[in-house]
Length: 136
Image (cartoon, rainbow, N blue to C red):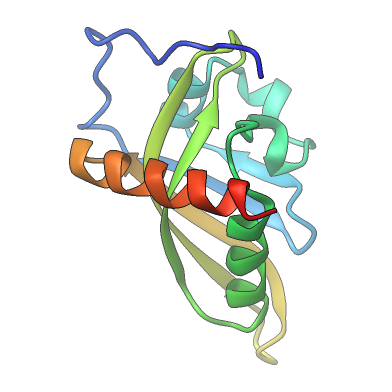
């Protein structure tokens, strides 16, 4: 696995809330300025792309399977996610994903809000994800 580096320590984004919206298939339909700033992509590069454009290869597939089964079931999903910037650096976010429903209660898309993950959450999650990857 290729070694990547985290976002520079001086680059702190804990005061930013990263927001994106997707259609029901996970294709990005909206990305706020903070999402663009942190991910290194422009809004034009993000909109129309699958949200996994920022997926870090260290993320176990099982984590996303849980996310998708939760939100497709109409529930809110919370978790810590490691994402990869356009330049190959990574960043950890505390994420909440909510389904968007129409007047008939059909899911039409998803909205996610993210903030910088705490150091403790990162350490705990890295260990859990490492174990998930080893179990495959």
